[in-house]
Image (cartoon, rainbow, N blue to C red; front, side):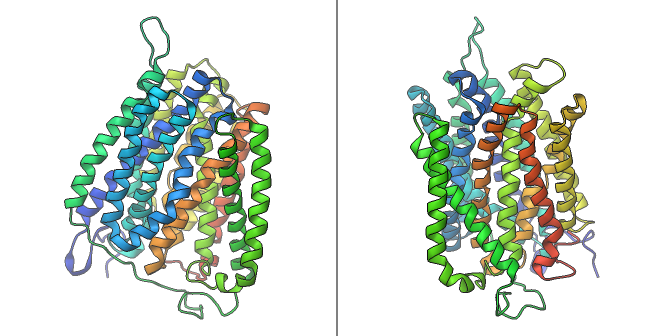
Length: 492
């Protein structure tokens, strides 16, 4: 009998190989890594150009992740009807629209115009992530799904290295007199992205991508066809309502953004956020409470390992986006030596190199260790790295920031693979919810920026520290949530 390490990652039925479809889809990971990498050096540019506080500049991250939140469910719905290929082409065309929007945005030269472009591109990327992430898990043996998604996400790491380099060149450019010209050249890399994705759209429209449906599995002790017992467990019910709180907070954040899109009044934003979140939570509770048992027994929300994955992804992306967004702020303000914005942007590429190294090494380690165990370990290690930063230990803290990139590397794809494991035909819809959950990247950086404004950038790392502890808890609890003693993605 073949072992996980000796079998091909891309072996299909009847000796068929899925290596070519996997390579094509992996190119999409590089694309959104590049776009995300540019986003993460844009915050500091707007802080300097528009004299924004850390919390105000976090609206860039908000606009980015808002696109994911708004389009995740439509993307999942569309992918279920037109297949993986159709979802990919639709996403690429939407990214192109967002990229070309930066041309008029440069002439409008107002913060909201750039935020709209960021949101449009993210909306297109949502289609790609909603489709490509689950697709990589079915392009070969099912127990190697976590390894494949981490390998594909390594391409994402390459894009994240290149993104800050492009951002450094175009966002922080200067003229002969040393005056910043970033506002005039910011549109160039985005238009280049738009042209590239149009070419990719043509390639994918002609490519042969099999539309594979994963096998649905349920734990042996489950009583229903959907893996839910006749009476929902306390964990199932608790996780469902925890997700509802997170959803209410996300809608509250959207309302705050709409109310303050021109003024950037942080006090008004906080009030609108609080009131809207409370109203949405109260209203949705009144509507859903009578149906709580039926919802908890549904094909998706009756699976605790899935509903907990949406929360883990929310907190992971919250931590990731906060660290990525304020990396340059931390380096320029807390490093033991003076470092300029341009040098800090270059160091961001070095940090993403650590991220890429973690992805490559993680994909290899996942062939030996259980995915959920490694996720739990890396969550604890990253919480410790953040603690070192909070303590302000000079070079030790400086190095800890780079180490955090390494340990973050496997988290997104591993949470994704664990969350959709065994969902079969529900996988595309589950994928949409997990992608939607990365709205955490829009909410928590605001909190991290506020802490940084009042207490310094080092102490702001207490926010991702707490988030990583939740990720670690999910990793170690996954087998119990799944209802198995030997989970399937183990020897990935």
